[in-house]
Amino acid sequence: MVDRDGPLETIRWLQDIGEELAILEGPGFEGAREDNINYLPICPFGSEITEFLEIYKSPTQFDDVINKMYELKKDSDNPWDYPALIHVLGILQHSYSRKRAELAGAEIYNLGSKSQSGNLVKYNEEAIKKTGMTKEEVRKVLDKAFYVYKIEYPEKE
Image (cartoon, rainbow, N blue to C red; front, side, top):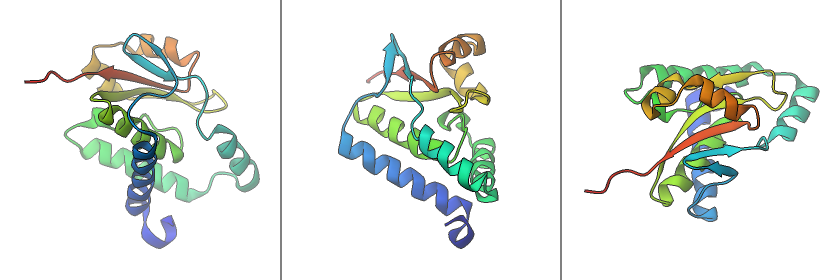
């Protein structure tokens, strides 16, 4: 799809899938919670990504999509709304989680993510700052998780 339609359309396609799945699932949060921290102790799509990479290695198209997503984040006025991206299916996961939170009347911020092997960790520095947390606090949660989100409920006027 990246070769045919480009990285941006691939991102939109993955986001649309995530949001549609969230609508089917309904409002809420998956994974575990500690107060307003939501984390996923199991890596979504972890075995699929591992198996794919063992067979096909890491296609350059994955890098194209990830690089495009980070370019969009860099150019955004709201970089805290983007995922701490580890792999392309993280785009789908992030869209799914954000939409379910939205349906529940909340906002979530992806503070950090860890690869299924545990050897790659990414932080969303802007989201960490916006939520008033520290990188160390996020790292501690990532010791037992693959995705870490902060849940916030907007003030109603």
